Picture 1 (cartoon, rainbow, N blue to C red):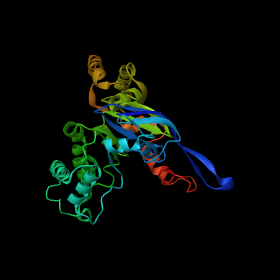
Picture 2: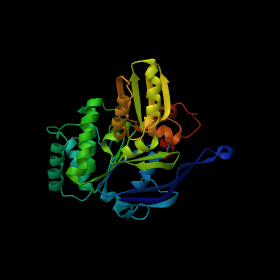
Picture 3: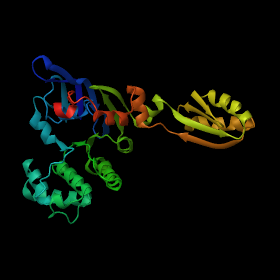
Length: 336
């Protein structure tokens, strides 16, 4: 559904001697198969939004090629737009129009008859829990209702590929989780391929078949969340033993399958790849050695651990730092 090769996007900022070239995207290669749900992660300024805008034909690449739904984004942009649904981060509804009218008008822009657009719109309202809101204006809706309305507009023409740009930004936790279910249903119910950009690591972890991480304009990882976590750091195993003498035994036993051991009081900790397979044998060895365990805890690595290992910085820290960078440095949002 998506095939990109060597995508480059360069911007020029400033004037005169202050003029400089900024590479927002630097040779991105990307493939998304039909039926996949892909989570696209990266901090502000990493090239995430710029890449999305290229793929949705909102921005011409400086170099490289991309085909979306079988069409070239540079030479067949109209065909691309007819084939995709796009839910922008800021939404696209007019706050003072009736929700049903917005969806129907959007469908008619794609060549649907009014009757077909009404029928499909009513179906989507039922599926997205927007019942009773056909004659309500978006300005009178909750945040979660408005985001579901944005998704309904993106799906009205039954696209084969749906782009969701930060679909749950600004929603409360309950509304986010509710919307997750609707996003997960897009593939099973609508048969759609989903390309999801998000800053929420738990969201990508819960929804995506595959995670793609972009940093400084380049793809630095692409795999399932489980594989990325397992390959990067392993699971943290924390053994709490009963006595000082048993710390040494626990250290030796855990050290045989672990790396990066630390000891704190009666706690012995280490990273173990796919600990679920290794810990049962470890517990048997400790029991045979007479070690009395007070507690055992296995903590799986997070996607933020993955990002930290790959880039040397936490994704959350990178997001926070984006708001404190030199104001003279252009951000991705300003550039693109």
